[in-house]
Length: 70
Image (cartoon, one colour):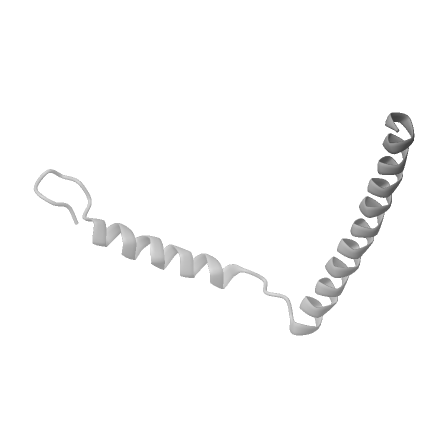
């Protein structure tokens, strides 16, 4: 639908956007709860590991800079 200037109505665009969005979400291959929990545990482990590595590097570089400066 269009108004008298030939531009599409905003309502039509919103309805089309919503319909397309719902259509795309139905195509998504959603994980099962078991898969989601397994992937969540992997993410948490990787985050903890990276936190330990980055914390260790921060500690080492802080001590190193302290020795050089002080």
